[in-house]
Image 1 (tube, rainbow, N blue to C red):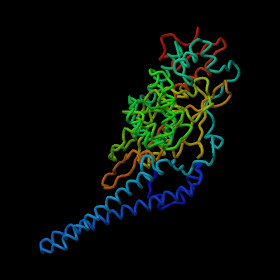
Image 2: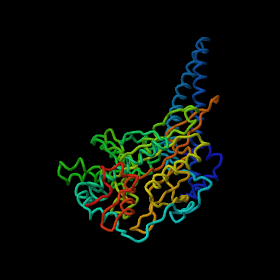
Image 3: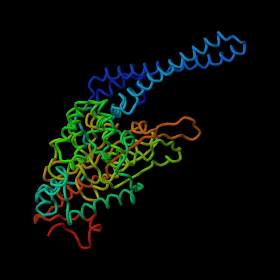
Image 4: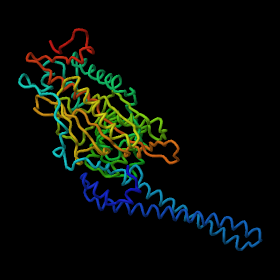
Length: 497
């Protein structure tokens, strides 16, 4: 979220900043924001003036009654009643304008963060910049089988069984490979807690929409996240009446064609499919109205960990050292924006595990903390002896909430290139404004917004892919990296027969 006062005072900076991040029509966007802002302030002023006049007239009624001037008293009473209507109208207009500009579905909530000054220009990943030199030397010669083929050959990866029960972008991992994946996650968690000082947290995997809004997943990326909740027919009917009637009719027709026992499970998929076809707000309204006690599955523990400070005012002492959280959780992503990419294998799954790092800092500490966080992620790769490189993302390739992002990319022999395995972002005060997470300096009355940072330390599934490919041997087995041997059954140094 952005400070409307900053846009008001420095509109050109936002036009330039959003344009450089690929926002089309940034000038018109800023103009629309300022127009709404002017109208909102005018409505607030009108309401305040009408309220002041009503209060003054109410006082004068008592004075007129004291003078037995009944005519004047009646006139004033009529004026008070009229002003009540003006106040109600101004309040209604204020609520409407506030929702359009500053509400969860408002114009400002849908705008991405501005990039830091040292972030390079660029439209996509081609504009990213290598930082320093790659670490480690990619293996030369030897087997370079794709991890999916390697796992299937060992009988430890089963995509067919997963597809039968869950569809595409799922996998069944078995035996020694499942144990290796568990070892990777535990190893990462131990490194981040034992060596880097992060506090381990076991957070909820289901969160409410306020939490998703706080970290920036909602409202813009509602098609990329999974939701859960009990279907509420009355709520759906109510939303359908005020929303997209044609879509509601299509949903009902599709459901009527299914056996009764399958309809409950089919609701979410049908609405999401139609939502991808028509992203009108009415579609979202009907989708939201489907459920009772609606929750969202976290796409990353960043959501749960960052929201630990939502709606809080921390003391300066509490931020003398940055607050650091870490968690090993499953993550769930619909991958709506990546159709056709990495459809086979473990690189882009709907369900995967990740060790997440989150830091909460004072504004002046966030840049240093960002570098520290990246080094905490790099340390895992170095301990596993996996070749990697660090990339500074350009403005067009950064995430919605980030002001600056470093990606770590690991070497995959089968592809002969580096692929992302960690992304570490400094979000500045963008998320904290959405969560209302603040702190107060000693001796100061005013509060300031904290800075939030998040990063992967690392993605477990992608690390499993990297270990499988970089440690595969000519006989088809996978050697267990030395750092992981203590986490495996005694004497187990290889995966495979």
